[in-house]
Amino acid sequence: MRSLRTAALATPLLSALLVLGATPAGTVPAPAPPPRATIDGWPTASPAALGLRPARLEALAAEAKQADSTCYAVVRKGRLARDWNWGTRRTTPREVFSVTKSVTSALVGIAVRDGSLRLGDRVSRYVPQWRGTPSATVTVRHLLSNDSGRFWSFDSDYGALVQARNRTAYAVGLTQQHAPGSAWAYNNAAIQVLDAVLRRATGTPVDRFAARRLFAPLGMTHTRMVRDASGRSTTVFFGLQTTCLDLARFGTLYLDRGIVDGKRIVTRDWVRKSVGASSTVHNAAYGFLWWLNRPGPLRGATDAVDANGQPLTPVSGQLAPGAPSSTYAAIGLGGQVLLVDPRSRTVVVRLGRPDLSGGAGYGFADAAEVVTTALR
Image 1 (spheres, rainbow, N blue to C red):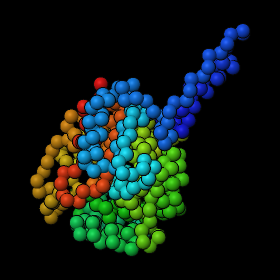
Image 2 (image 1 turned 60 degrees about the vertical axis):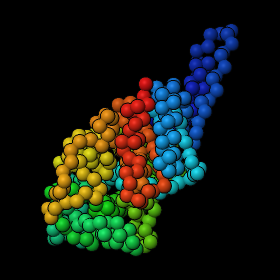
Image 3 (image 1 turned 120 degrees about the vertical axis):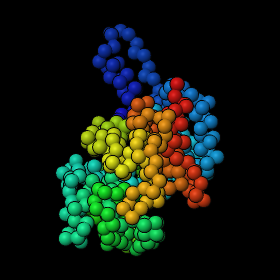
Image 4 (image 1 turned 45 degrees about the vertical axis):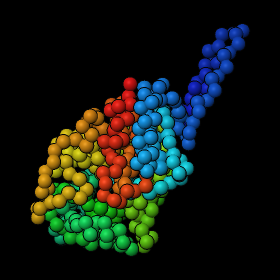
């Protein structure tokens, strides 16, 4: 990815080098063009210049506003086309709920690249409490794919886990419900176990690891992960506090296949495995803690299942049928969305106040409308 902090200086710097090295004697060098305007470090360009329909983009922003959004941003080809902010300053961090999971996936990818752990490692290597139990064969891959078979119930995942003083200890202490790999569940508690895995593998608290190895290199200066009430565990299934434009930086890291400012953060293979293909046969729409637009059997966060963990009402299709199948997103409660379309090199971010009324709200398909209706 071209540096977001230095892109604004690239054109005048190049002009200066050309003047010093290639200006014919006796000629007057042309003045360097002024630096491009930037917004919170993002180089900007008009929507039209980026191949977007300005009127349609304004209409989509208006729709986002009506959905109680606090910010909405569209980036294309490394340039910010527009961002909108309602009631919250663009640099004010806010809770993005399960968008956190995709960040946690990236942290696992960094640890894998470092050689600190492997996808096929048994979690019991890092969580001794699981040795000699039915959870002994659960792997890191299972946790990332949400098919670990660890215990799940709505009350546990959205009640007891959230209220636990030490969320990682609570998650580790749950039992095995299904054989690893045999059933899919949007399992917050299973994902929280990655806090223990990462902390043990890297020797660093996860919030600090994220700040140093991910947020700082990406220039995500308004972003942080949080710890639970015990102060011992980083909450990795939700709890990320960030902004629209910082999330766009994170999305661009994946769009540029793991590179930022010429520095590799995660491997190209990690990006491919995370967002380039379904990670489990049970849910075509899921990668490694990312949501995908792949066609096939679809599972939602709280679908009804039978005693074997299989859906009572199977559904097949795509999250956004009109968008490319390669599109993917990080999604959080209340319509927090970071959507990435590799084909058009477009990133869309929408954050808003959670609607807990049970309505459809804002989602993957809404953010994908930029790709399906606003591109020229």
